[in-house]
Amino acid sequence: MNQLSNHFPTAELQNSDAAHHLHPFSDHETLIREKSRVIVRGEGVFLWDSDGNRIMDGMAGLWCVNVGHGRREIADAVHEQMLQLSYYNTFFKTTHPPVVALSEKLTELSPDGFNRVFFAGSGSEANDTVLRMVRHHWAILGRPEKSHIIGRKNGYHGSTVAGASLGGMSGMHAQGGVLSGISHIRQPYWFDEGGDLDPDAFGLLCAKALEEEIDRLGEDKVAAFIAEPLQGAGGVIIPPPSYWPEIGRICRERDILLVADEVICGFGRTGAWWGSETFGIEPDLMPIAKGLSSGYLPIGGVLVKDTVGDVITSGGGEFYHGFTYSGHPAACAAALKNIEILQRERIVERVHDHIGPYLQARWASLGDHPLVGEARMVGLVGALELVPDKPSRKRFANEGLAGGICRDHSFKNGLVMRAVRDSMIISPPLTITEEEVDLLVALVEKTLDDTEHTLRSTGRLSA
Ligand SMILES: *Cc1c(COP(=O)(O)O)cnc(C)c1O
Image (cartoon, rainbow, N blue to C red; front, side, top):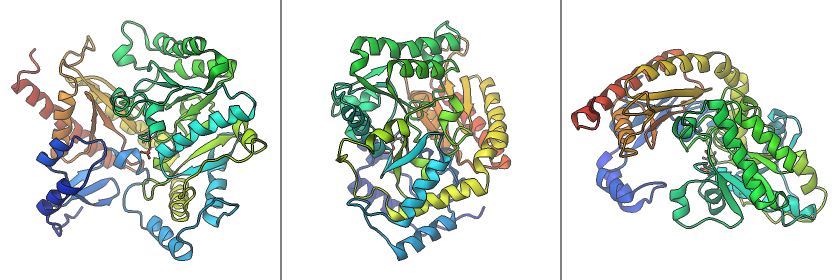
């Protein structure tokens, strides 16, 4: 790969950014002091910063660049669509060809019984749509009191008020509060909370928490349960195999709608088109975003099974909901081309049959490192648990410190890994090659060694 010469005055950009740009999920005091990294180009699995350093994008942007960076044919499709029809809305009995084509394509790719899609501009808006749609659905059926929604602690469903409320991030709840009529049950996080139980027994215990919460509220009051097939932002928490079948049984028996938030898992991340396929989930609604366009333009939506779709479309009058950019033509064109690439290059099959198992095997071997308590992965999304004492699964006293040190070393070594507390996360573009996997794993090994060295030399790792 050739290096990019520096056409960008890094310090000027950083200073201006620090002065005028409020960043998402950032501690601005730290950010202003330490300055932002300026990313100027992307190609395949690589990024370049404004000083010409090449960095492997181990996170596919924010879990979204499934087909890799720099696809000219997506840019061309958007360009052509913008010249033809740059914008028109889909309110007031109007439509346009790209939104029709994308709706048809998505329902063709979805599990049986999913025949409709509602478009939004992001995953957060998709989950706002979920909240309003499930309540509307029960109201049409004459059961408006069936309105409570159950989510999970440490789940992530976006950053709008509804998204943050459905999610179970306590830090987010503390800033701005939680909507009423939403509660959260425990997460199936065996490594942290499983104790002496084997994973399957623990999975069943966590699923039973849903039944207990429904009993507490009364099943005639509960509209839906929402969860990610695997928790992404919560730390790539992969539920034990016993968990989802039991959740499915409970929702069916209690007449509770099941919402699988596919914003990360959808479009191949777990080695199938849907995380629901990988984990054996039969949802009624699937919010989507991220991999839908591989991040080339912002777009999200909710895939709707006939159980809900038939109700919404055959009574209840107008659903007072929608966004100016629902089904934006250029975003639809980007998503259509992205899906065409996923299909033409058989990228999802490749994750399932070949590159997924290849990285999973290499990743598992990282579990031998003295700092790593667990190395887990499904498809091409995984985590390493950093611990001071492997056998006990005990965590570092100062949570997040080791993760932060590891993330900084990783960047220095030319790899984007994300730290969630003391879990290191990767979710690379699905197009990553074997050679690039080897490089990724070598960079992680070096990063773990560097992290161990820093922890030892600062007295945070004794034995
Ligand atoms: C990222 C994410 C969202 C929110 O999507 P935005 O496009 O950032 O609004 C919702 N759900 C899950 C599971 C996510 O990972």
